[in-house]
Image (spheres, rainbow, N blue to C red):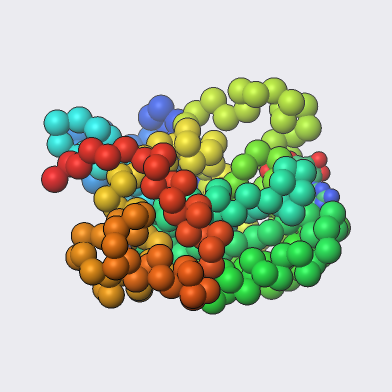
Length: 309
Ligand code: GDP
Ligand code: ZN
């Protein structure tokens, strides 16, 4: 990262109240922000986790954030108020690593489909990681690997505990900012410490895991990877408020549904029970993976119908 004497660029790892942890090349500084940045009520001008910032280094431990560098992307939630208000959860997230387990807890494609929708909505590339393959036969999961790969998603079959299949995954994480998501117990912490052993102590300890209040803040936290890039830990998509989607929007984020929808009889077809639905036809003909479509219907019925526009 560039440096001119005391002025350096860094990445915001964590935001707590008015304190910002910023990673520079070889150190993490505890930072405050400068006047111009403190006065802002504007969501887009306030410092977020993942922001690349210009920092004035006061000492080996402290600094002041001077400026936010232009954002490449943002992960947002939308607050229901008079207007459709955007709140930025994190900035510059390159990809979302969706972690599932084959067993313990049971594999749930419905959950990965929800995460895929969130990733698509936020223009973040998703990676699917099916963990605990040591607990099942790999061929049980080849079907999912095939079906999700057909949609253009990268799928990794791994065992975080026994360090199987991690090399390819590590290559995908290198020099990227990756947000880890997944149900509790699927092996996210184990995966982080297997790809980056030095992070073990920084993620949840065993004693902490038994305590439900592990994540008291509802924010994303990033950790630097020794081989380049950052990995992000979340308190959960639901806690972050990213679950909130509108029924009308869902179909846009299901890639294969979006692809077939142009042949539906009605332009505003929801692909549920409308006549002449090309999506339902594609499911019947085996061109759309049936389980994905079943999940689509379940997600659809769970969503709010209100429209903000
Ligand atoms: P998290 O809640 O998603 O962070 O899940 P953890 O990393 O805490 O893992 C939950 C449990 O699953 C722990 O007991 C881990 O040892 C176990 N686990 C994680 N990865 C694997 C794996 O690849 N195989 C098996 N058999 N167990 C695993
Ligand atoms: Zn349709």
